[in-house]
Amino acid sequence: MEHFDREQFRFFLKDRIRTMIDFSQTDQHQGIAPPPIQKPYHPDARIITLPQLSEWQAIRSVDLLHAIAHRRSRRTYHEQALTLEELAFLLWATQGIQQTAGHGTAFRTVPSAGCRHALETYLCIMHVSGVEQGIYRYLPVEHALLEVSVDKTVSHRIVNATYHQSFTGTAAAAFVWAAVPYRMEWRYGLAAHKVIALDAGHVCQNLYLACAAIGCGCCAVAAYDQERMDELIQVDGKDEFTVYLASVGKVD
Ligand SMILES: Cc1cc2nc3c(=O)[nH]c(=O)nc-3n(C[C@H](O)[C@H](O)[C@H](O)COP(=O)(O)O)c2cc1C
Image 1 (cartoon, rainbow, N blue to C red):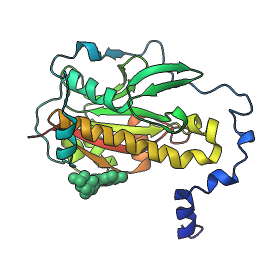
Image 2 (cartoon, rainbow, N blue to C red; image 1 turned 180 degrees about the vertical axis):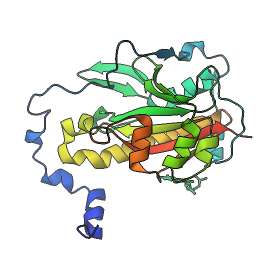
Image 3 (tube, helix red, strand yellow; image 1 turned 120 degrees about the horizontal axis):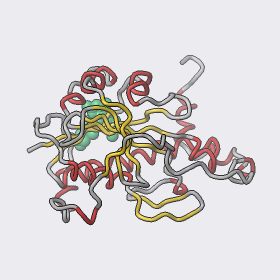
């Protein structure tokens, strides 16, 4: 840490990097094809179909005024499982695709700098009806879950990976957002990293509001052990790594 001073960290928050970048050198301007909007997966992987918006029975509409008025960080959850429909709603609210736009872009329910959407959503599932405990990845294009690994120790492991914040293990599920930085760097070079962090804030706020609208509670978590969390969701920690997470469960 002695190599860094406060100004260097503040520099990251300011809009100075943009002025130092030669945008004609970015991969986009070099004519390199954009990376895929979603991380590819093995064709034999196990996929769990999620209820589509048009099929939702319990969630027909939600009250935004109520959701904003009641949004708080909640760390105590009922043991009651989330339904698959509730999980589908929360995933759609945080990363759902509204419209594909060609040229490697898709508009989603959250904004993203340059519509690059450099985040993947992993789930640590502890109590969701009909889904075994373990690690999953949301596939926004298919609106489905990809099984990463069935793991009965997931609750114990996430508590360990979050410096023993025990509520992460008593939640029904934890949303873990991993950045794939190249998706943003392709267009913005070194100016990518600040906006990835800004994007993550939008995603988590939608999760807070969507939870408040359906009787769930949520708590953002930025204090986690980088290596343990990356190992838990099975990403390499280099081209893809955890940047943020949030626990979710049923509340009063
Ligand atoms: C970026 C960010 C990181 C956070 N990290 C944690 C965390 O690691 N553990 C935790 O218990 N709460 C965490 N929180 C929740 C805050 O403690 C909480 O938002 C704050 O106390 C205000 O309470 P409220 O959300 O109910 O308004 C985080 C919130 C944000 C926005």
